[in-house]
Image 1 (cartoon, rainbow, N blue to C red):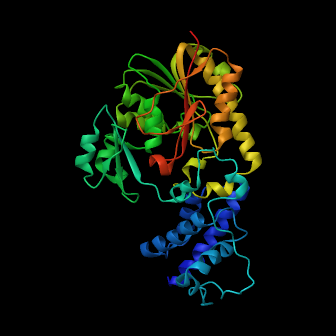
Image 2: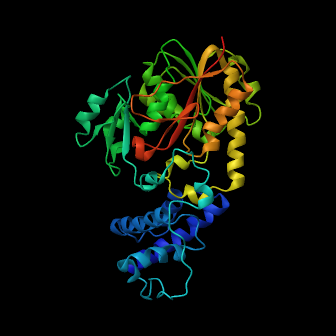
Length: 396
């Protein structure tokens, strides 16, 4: 492919990604993969160049553009090398007309920025969209961070995460035989900090209420040496089905999975009411803390979608609280930097539930900043995804 043809292909893919963002369609990675399958003639260099164009543009444009061309034109205005590729060649984009619409660049739409937690300052912008490192977590059942240091000497330790090892973003760690052998998992430092903050111990009964594919479930199993009783729940069958083979690979035998029917969670968890020593509620959210990995999420968030997330979060923290034994602990967490999804949800819960208290010290020194009655981790301050968590203790 010519450089101009690569750019035109990127524009076409951006059209599909923008439409999916507006309509709640497939994520950008899936759209890109499907587009490449349809263009089998594209070589590896072509694919890398097209991907760079697509994701550089997504990171630069603050909200879903009217078209992929409008988005790419905004980059062309700042980069003559891109502008030259609008050459009108057979497979390239048409020449640029001065009056054409350009998409707006920036971190996010101002209405979205206005929703951020007060701790988010202007210094966070670049870090929130920079490419994330690849963080690994050693599986204590089989390995340690020292073992990862031997396997991946190009990496470095993650401050405050004893099982963590950080690699450059493009490292193909999951292709290493040690991954297939269950020695480690890919897990961002924020999730490692949150899993450790649960303060789980061997012999405890633990519920991971929104387990998804089981990243934090496996982290808890690792931290307890496969010695706790862990119930991993979710309403998404496809995601929850990923956990058993991952647990088998990790030699984590202490995990039971339970698929919940939406709206019937309370009845389906009746046997766990007030019996869990620890409950983890990693609630569905805007994902605004993960823009480093999925920058198109800022194109997807609408007021109605946010309201749905907020309603789900309030419901799930209530369901989780009912499972906690007297004196037990619940962690409420969201990978979000939006105030209403974080500190405001916890404030509302504590106002409704007298006797519950918020713990004030459970993160490694220097990690996170106090945000109301919880803590907020951010890319610029903590070198990890944006993540709010609060650890709450039930009355005895």
